[in-house]
Length: 322
Image (cartoon, rainbow, N blue to C red):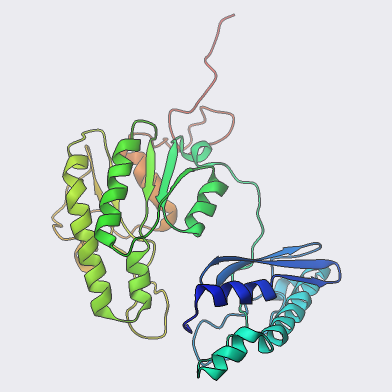
C-alpha cells in the first residue's frame, strides 16, 4: 500500500465523498488510513461482485451482478451505479492537487478506489437473546465496534499504542474489573494480524512474543478465579509470505476452566493444538463449546421458551395454578 499522510488521506476522501447516480446516491465514510465504508442509498442490492482483486499487479474487477441476480433490476442498477462511481473517482483523483504533489516528489499517485464485501443490514437476535450472556467487547478497531453495536454488545473502546505487551496486559486488567457486570468478555488485539500483513516473519514473531509477555502479567490472577472460563484463539491464519492475505489453516484454540477436559497438549501453537481433545472446531460450533463449559448448553430438542435459544435455562414464564 502506498505511503500516505493523514492530511493526504483526508483530502482524497473528501474529494470522493459524495456521488449521485440517478436513483442511487453514494457516501464514502473514512475509517482509518486509506480504508473506508461506501454507503449506497436508494433502490440498491448487495448482490454484486467485489472490485478489489486483492493481489497486486492484477486489474480491478468489473462490478457485476451475481449470476442468480443477473436479471434483477435493483442488482443491475447497483452494479452500473458502482461502475459510474469508480470511473468518476478516478477522474477526480487523477486531477487532485494531492496527486500532483506526490508525482512531483517521485511518489505514486493514489487515483483509484476498490470495493469488497457488499452487504445489507438485516434484523438479527442480539448476542444476549441468542446466548443468554451479558457481553462486553474490549477492542480497538471500528470493525469490532460495529459488530458489537449490531449484536447489541457493550463496547469498551481502547487504542493501540504500538506496544502489544502493554496493550494486552491493560485490556486483561480492564476485563478482570468488568467481570462483575458481564458474563462474556471479548478481548481483541489486531497486532499479530497487522504484523502478518507486513510479510516479515521476524516482525510477526516479535509481536507474538510481546503478547505472551502481556498475557503473562495478568493470566495468573484470572486463572485463580474458579468461576472463570478462559478461551484463547484467533479468527484466521495470516501467512507471512506468498500472495494470500488470510489463509485457511485451522488456528489453535485453548479453553481453561473448571470442568474442562484435560488433554496432553502443553504448548499453544497450530501443530500441538491440533492433537488436543477439542479436535478441529468450526466457527459455528465455538459458542456451543463455551455454553457447554459454562454448564449452559441446552439439550437438543428442549423447548423451554417460546423462541428457540441456544442456552439453558431460558427466561421462561413460571407455571401457575391460578
